[in-house]
Length: 116
Length: 115
Image 1 (cartoon, rainbow over the protein chains, first blue to last red):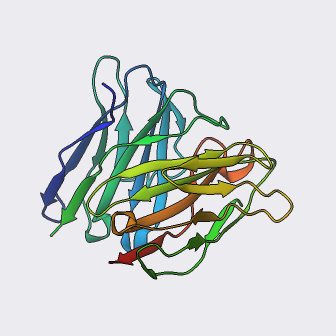
Image 2: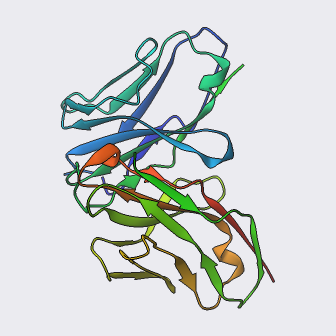
Image 3: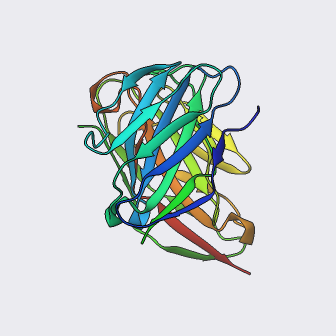
């Protein structure tokens, strides 16, 4: 499609439950990025993909967070055993080309994750 | 590492006032610079970009000039409208360093425009 589509818009989970977020990048874009927006508007990079391959995962809390981008499927970000501090808005972005390029990243509307 | 610093907000203006939001950066090499805008309850929208020194990005009456000598990318608009009320983020991607392949954002500046 012409927009980055993220689902669901809102997700509520009890502490310790699993949460799974989805992202369909813009058609033709090779790179997908996940960011976490926490209090006071701070953005934290989590992970990026080049097609189905992980490009940079330096921002991922490896113990509980995982992500995939499989062919012909939306990309996903999964959080196991959620904690209160995982409450945030998770944004997905895509771009035609990635690393170091001047191509802008196009963002979805985000998924608001609330951990109770 | 790479970083972006924006002026502290919030910024409150009357309609038709002049807007400046300051942004300075530290980066390896020659980064590409961006301004994104986030309206209430929405995602980030690209507002404008500049990819090399002295480039001017412009869109919807907003503009920003890539100043390598002062490592700045200040956002300006000559006459703001109530509909410009939003959070504005300055960001960069660098060709090397810690922002290689990912956006590094400033802390955001909340703009409120009153009629």
